[in-house]
Amino acid sequence: MPFIVNTDRDREEMLRSIGVASFDELIVDIPQEIRLQGALDLFPALSEQEVMKLLESLSSSNSNTAGFVSFLGGGAYDHFIPSAIKSIVSRSEFYTAYTPYQAEVSQGTLQAIYEYQSLMCRLYDMDVANASMYDGATALAEAVLMAMNVTGREQVVLAGGLNPNTFSVLKTYLEASGHGSILRNRLENGIGSIEGLKERMNGSVAAVVVQQPNFYGCLEEVDAIGAVAREHGALFIVSADPLSLGMLAAPGSYGADIAVGEGQPLGNHQNFGGPYLGIFTVRQPYVRKIPGRLVGMTKDRDGNDGFILTLQTREQHIRREKATSNICTNQALCALQAAVYLSLLGKQGLREVAGQSALKAHYLAGRIAALPGFSLKYGAPFFREFVIDTPIPASDIIDALLEKGIFAGYDLSASGESGLLVAVTEKRTREELDRFADLLAAF
Image 1 (cartoon, helix red, strand yellow):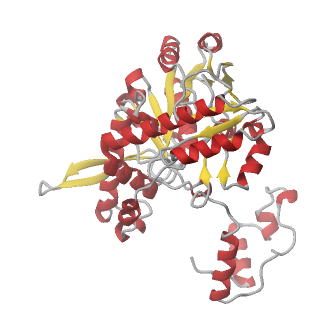
Image 2 (cartoon, rainbow, N blue to C red; image 1 turned 180 degrees about the vertical axis):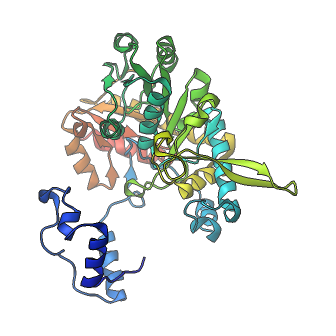
Image 3 (cartoon, helix red, strand yellow; image 1 turned 45 degrees about the horizontal axis):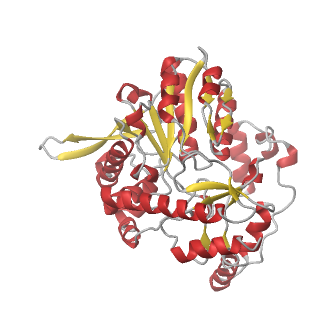
């Protein structure tokens, strides 16, 4: 984007047209304490060669999974990404696509999105998938708002262990939109209590939300949770890890009304936290309540297949009071990568990745649990992630193993809890798993 120079006269004319006397009056609603005070402390002017050298120097200070063995999880995972994905999505017709406003000149992008939607419906066993959301957290928050819209109720119950970052996004959404309260269930052995869930249900609950596997890697009792939601007339929302569905039952098979997820494990790099991909699927009766946009297939006047934006229930296209969301775009490139990933792996490949991740995670958990001073914090079944209690603070272990080229996991003290959350993917070798366990034995 080019730098556009505005003269003092230009700025004065724009402010006068807006109806304010000064720039400070324009931003009067922004508190003084968070405004920039003084000029930016920028580098002196540099040539292109000097800028590249500086940026490479700054980049080299990062530690990443290209050089480290990663057991980090908690929402972003170090899965293998086939090199063919980059070759395909780097094609100019995909890589330069932003969002398909004009269907007649966006057929390639629209078809890719349509294929992505079809794959998500099959993966989650749901009727309809939209063209994606920003990320898994916003997908869940939008799902809760949708449930409130459908039911006319104002409360949501979190049935199990939800990712704290996702909870923070949900809380912000509800506070900003003036909606109702969040009721949190108690946890027993790492999963939500069914009796506790029943105690929290009432006629004002719009939705029951469960993450599967949950934040601690444990498998929630989704059948029982869904039954409680239906008994009280609440919608059942499942946030399911898409890669886990290579092994676990799909949300649609146990009665989910809305199923969402974080699509990063499907061929998308961790990217230091984003951009990511929000998966959003629903049952057919709720298709007109779905946020974002939906791509459909039709026939042109010559009988050829064509792709169109079937539904766009957002503020840019319909009256604000009828809009389902103010989400203004979708993660088309990340969705394309997910579609290519699933197409390359196929059913058997997805099962293989999920199976290897689970088997290797259970192998490592067994080795760690046998170490003096270490133990598995929860006894509930898990997929590829588990929590261990450690003899010293988890942060000390993480710092020490960084020196050995290992990301040891996620310190749960950041969430006000104790323990080390360890994730294992198909990338981890037997040698890496054994070395990790041997290094832990020294603490």
